Structure formats: C-alpha cells, structure tokens
Image (cartoon, rainbow, N blue to C red; front, side, top):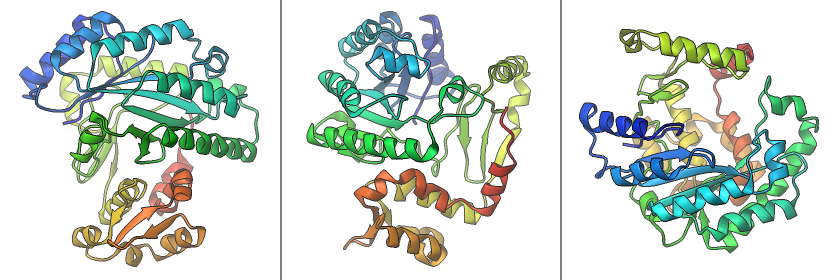
Length: 347
C-alpha cells in the first residue's frame, strides 16, 4: 500500500497520521512500503525521527536545484546551506531509499549549471534521482517570468534531459522511465523488482487522502477541486476544511472510466516504462493486441522510432522514445479527454 504525503507538520502530526494508518486503516507500517515527500525547509530532525521510528521506507526531497540563482528563478528561494543540512539529516536517518528530485529547463540553466546540481546530488549517493522537466502553468509566478518561445524552450529542455540522462547512466544508475533513475545494487532497484513503492499503480487502485489528492478505482478517477491561482487555491483549502465528514463519502470531481479509457491508461502506464507493454498480457486483459486497438498511434510511434517490439513480444520505448515521453502520452488521449482539456478554464 503506497502512502504519500507532502510533509508540513509539527512532530505530533506525523505521529497522528501514522496512528490513523495503523489503528483506523489497519495498515502495518513495518510490513508495507510507504513513502513521504519533503523539502529542504521541512525535513527537520524531529519529524524524520518519527518517520524512521514508524518504518518509512522511502523519503523523497524536492531539492530541484543546488544553485541558489536557479532556485530563485523557480520561485524557490532556498539556500544551499539549508539543502545540505536537510540532506545530512536524511542520510543520518538511514531510510532504505533516499530520492532527490531535480528540475531541468529552468530559465537561464546551462549544461554546466545542471552538471553542478547533478554532481551535488550524486555526492549524497541517493538510491534514486528523479529528473523532471520544468512545467510552467498559467496564472503562476513562473508563467509571468517565462518569456522563452515554446519551440526554443522544448529544444533546451530536451538537450538538458539528454545531458542529465547520460550523466546518471555513466554514474551507475539505471533508467526506468523518463524521470526515474535508480542506483544499481540498492534497495530502490530491489523494491522496483518486487513491485514496490516508487510508482503509483492506478490499475490496482489507490485512495488519496487530503486536499489535492487523487484517487483511482476501476470505474472512477476522482479528486478535489483544482486551481493554480493563489486566491482560488486558498478558497479550495478553506472549503475542504469546512466540508462535513459525511460529504467525503461522495466524489464531486471525477472522470468515469470506460473500457476504451482503461486500455489507453494501461498503455500509458506500461509503454512509458523501461519494462514496456507485454503484448500477451495486454491481449489477455483486453482481448486484442495493442496495435489492433490503436493502429494509427503505433504506426506513428514506429515511424518516429520511439518504440520497438523485442523478441519477447514486448513493446518498449527506445531511448529516443523515452526522451519524447511527453509527446507519446497525448497520442493516446481520447476525444473525450481532449474535449475536457479544451473546455477547462484556468483559474
């Protein structure tokens, strides 16, 4: 049972959350893998001590960059000393898996600057490093600052991605999806091989707790209201806090899944991973081969050299296909999803 949360607690709150998981939900926190996300500002010794004592198996810290000028450009005015202090505490806590998140595509970022962050992250010997492209959402401070054309920005992000990928592969990490790199011979690789906690499984189902959390059942994907503008976000949080407990029995913001959507979701979850999509398993689940259901999409993937079928009957992304994962995903969006996206109003 994966458990994820963004840590902004005093010491009593993680204790209470763990108590709820065990006493109310019936989870044995020492028998299941669970992960917590934190940041340099919130990874304090007392909170980490609680998580270590209760058996957390993975801590992920959103460093994003080790360079203070880049942090400022992403509206994250953290200091390098704060980052190093948090990582010192995380290493001392000795969680089985330490993950460091880094971002590429920051305004003004170069390969030389990105290399400094990569080298700094590697010096901590984390079991995982996630490399995320910078995404700029409308109505945010980053959108106000970002003036680069989409074409030149995409080209720079792709160049930086390849640079980061090659650096981590040379350092002894394996790539399992576009952002995910795991150090060989560590608990992160063992957990992945055992179907562990590093990736959420929307096919099996997952219940998210808290404002902004997403939940997945076989028939329904649902969440709370969504916004990016600060006043709207505050309103959503206030509404969530004021909601009577019995109202949480109903999903207000949801997308109902039909058979076609389940096929598309399954492909997006498997095809964009290094393990790929087993044609046999897909056929057993959905009654036909992937190419029979989506001939146009797979013809385009083949033409672009983004996927190949190996000798085991598995469709896998090529290294170039992995680099273009953000372009592969939309190929499998249904008309219903595209219409919903076009109708959405930023707020």
